[in-house]
Amino acid sequence: MAYTAEDVKKLREATAAGMLDCKKALDEANGDFDKAVEIIRVKGLKGVTKREGRTTSNGLVVARASGNLGVMLELNCETDFVAKGERFQELADELIAHLEASKVADLAAFLESKLPTGKTVQERIDEGNATLGEKIEIRRVVVLDGSPVALYLHRTSPDLPPQLGVLVQLASDALEAGKDVAQHIAAFAPQYVRREDIPADAIESERRIAEETARAEGKPEASLSKIVEGRVTGFVKEVSLLEQAFAKDAKKTVQQILDEAKTAVSAFHRFKVGQ
Image (tube, rainbow, N blue to C red):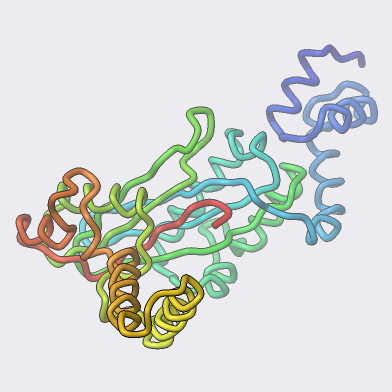
């Protein structure tokens, strides 16, 4: 049975396999499309272990937030071609729906959990490896439960799915302010909610670096203490969400925005593909 260039294109879109692999599969299947899909899947399964060492620097962030529950995961692949494909995005939707239903926040436990089909998440990922022809993996998952959760997803490129996501857990139902804060977190990437959350060793390390830098710059000994403390304070404000200048109004801190909305942030998570 003969096949056309349109058949090759259709097979590539259906499986995300390379053009040469699609041609070979159609040759082997004598032009039978369904058989060619099966051949690619079987060959893909055989190649899963060979892909283990490959780098997955592309992918997407998918998330859902409803009421007091928010879930998010990062699904990685090797190329942006696969990331923008329908099958990869359908896989992400299937996985986030399961995360929302199961609320399994530990990645290892989530991979071992069973989907409604009876397969584990890891088995479903292995299927994705096979059909898409690339190494596919979940890098991380998060579940926020118990109080209102705001969500923001950002596309870093218009032709790609979201590659940056933020969940913000709030003390009260102030989702408009929560989304504004989520957008701020997406842009400014704070590491902690408040200064009290910063580990003591991180502050001491910053203080040591600030002192060494000041001495290398030739600052006078009498001024060292004040200079060092000033730089440590700057570091604290840079990494603490509540002390950052708000993205939409630099005259106010994030803390002031939350106070005006009569709410507070108890936790946040920021996922960016590859970071």
